Image (cartoon, rainbow, N blue to C red; front, side, top):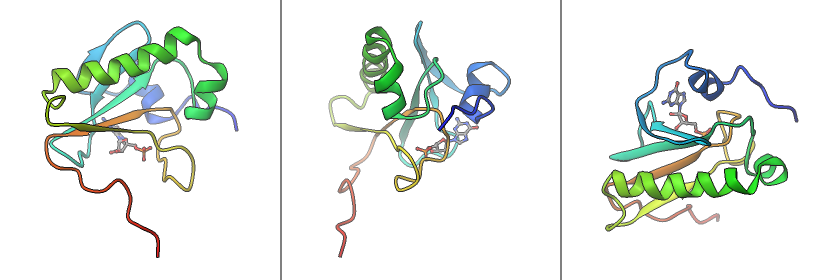
Length: 121
Ligand code: 5GP
């Protein structure tokens, strides 16, 4: 599947749509989710055009991959959730309900987050 350069995060990265930025470096931009599911809900986005984890693992440089995880940890620390604990999550594709087809890590925290998934019956 090809990358759709009109997705909402590509437009945020190009500065066409505003965001509430919390962190930026050469390879990543992090901003508050518009519809937060926890007191801390930040999206950590690579600046390169990658659709999901598979695409990122296939094509990104080692520096880009390292930068994404370092940004997630930096965001957790800056948001004050590192001590109590936090969750980093990436939805990939239809079964995971990925809405925006540009790779992003969700960083959730600020309250007990519950079980990771509901157990299937
Ligand atoms: P996904 O389901 O793709 O893993 O998550 C997409 C996330 O992007 C959702 O949590 C949604 O609230 C967030 N989102 C969608 N549109 C925008 C937007 O325009 N700005 C920001 N900051 N977040 C957005």
